[in-house]
Structures are given as structure tokens and as C-alpha cells.
Image (spheres, rainbow, N blue to C red):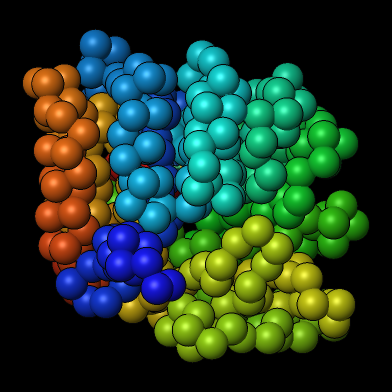
Length: 349
Ligand code: SAM
């Protein structure tokens, strides 16, 4: 800490509201093989043209600049990241960067069975898998595809490959049958997964068509029924929401319940009913290298365009620093739900 350069580095990615930004989510493709009702329209035509997709080398270069500025956590997401050819190689390149302490993937699980081992071997430790229901008909209605069994096979393969933790991300809105959520919780407990219920955000026309319900209340009810207790909050956690620190990760936006052994079992992520922007520690990189500073605002930096126009690492670093300095304080999802026309899959969830 005596080294002035080290001190400077630690402060490098602090935004205008004093938040330390140490987490980068990278959308490695905006394509997806599902069309979840709250995420992407069935007939969506607005995908990025392949010529603008950053190559693995270009992505690694940009990610390396963030890592040099103190980012230690990287998540690969999308679209559906496992549709990107060679995604495990990209993961290995990121995992090998000195300074990356936590490498994770968010996936819908449809392709997970054949990728799980390679991702684990590449150094990915944590997985988030989207799963909204265990009812096959409801799954098909929500996602537009009849492939629940593929997702369950993917989850089994991920567990066998040694991922820990495996979190099930489940978007729960006002019309979601509570019986489906209870069944998911029973499944998560039986399998040793963590179930996280997520309020839908009004992103794009799909997200804007969803009515959220207060998941703090639902989480508390389900937890009480299942005999779970609130997990210990971490000082500096998300807005006093009882975030817990877990192996390999800092406090995140979720509020958790545990069976008493400390490890989370059930969590809620409540961007609508109780947002956690004050503790935001992340930014997102789109498949074309656009840096998105907030899920719920349009502020962005065209790092990919700059890179392809020949920007040096120093110029890109300056653009990253300027972007982080201007990161918005919070989203306006409640006040201006019509504001964000981008779909979640475009930004990288
Ligand atoms: N395909 C990958 C997956 O399923 O995890 C990664 C991308 S997906 C956009 C990431 C997460 O965003 C998923 O858990 C999905 O359920 C969630 N999501 C999509 N649209 C959302 C919305 N409008 N509000 C809240 N979460 C949303």
C-alpha cells in the first residue's frame, strides 16, 4: 500500500459516486437460442452484424485493459455465450490474465452439457443458469422452445464438472405461479444449487410488458415455509439488503436466505422494488465492444469502434477512465420505465 502506483491503481476505477468498479460483464454474442418472454421478441431482427463482433483477440485486449485497471471479476454472458464458437478458449485466455480472481459464465443451459467440462478446465468456477420453471409446458411458453430436459442435463453436467456455486436465475413476475417457484426451490435444495428470484426490468418492449411483484416479500414467505433464515449481511453490501459474501465473490445485489450452514440457498434480486445501485460495482461490454455504464441508462463508450479505428491502449484506457467517471448514479426503471429500448440480450445480462 506504500507504493503510490498501487494506490493509484486501486483508485483507478472509482466512479463519480465513490463506487469501486471491479466487475466486468462481457457479452460474447447477442444471439440466443431462446426467446424468453421478458427478454427478446420472437421475431427480433436487430442483432449486431457479425462484422462488428469483436474477435476473441480484440475482446481479450479490451478485457486486459480493464484488468490492468483493477477489475478482478469477469463474467461471460450474452445473448447466449455458449453459442459463441471457441468460448472456452476465450475463457481460458481471460482466466490466465494476472489479476483475474473470479471468472464466471451466465448461460441458459441449453448447450451446457457439452461445454461444462471445457469451461471448468478453462478456469470458470461459477455458473449462473437461467431457469424459470420446471414445468415443461410453461418452460416452452416462456422460452419459445421445448428444451427443458437439455437445460436439466446441462445442470447435471455442470455439477459433475465441479462448478460451485451453481446459481439458478429465475425471473419471477406478478403472474408467475408461486407453485412453480416452490418447485424450483425444492429442486435447488435437493441439487445443492442456489435459487435466485429476479424482478423483471423494463428493458425493451419485452421487459416493459412485464409487471413485477415485490420479491422481498415472496422470498421471505418461501424462506419461512422452507425453514430458511436470513443470511448474514456483509458490511458495505448492497444497500443494507443483507448481501452475503461467498467464496470467490464479493457482495452482490442479491439478498439471501440460508439453511443455517452459512451458504445461501435462496436469494432475491430486486432492481424494481428495492434497487441496489448505491453498491453497483460493474459495467458491461457488448459484443461490438460498446461499454455500457448502466443497465438502465443509455450512457456508453464505443470502445470497439475506437479499437478498430486504431486506438492505442493508452487511448482506450483514457476512454475507459472517462466512461467510469461518468457512470450514472442509478437506473430510472421505476420513474421512466419506457426509457431503455435496448433488449437485455443486447447489453449482456
Ligand atoms: N443467456 C444467458 C442466460 O440465460 O443467463 C445470458 C444472458 S441473459 C440476458 C442473462 C439474464 O438476464 C438471464 O437470467 C435472464 O433471465 C435475465 N433477463 C433477461 N431479460 C430480463 C429482464 N427484462 N429483467 C430481468 N432479467 C432479465
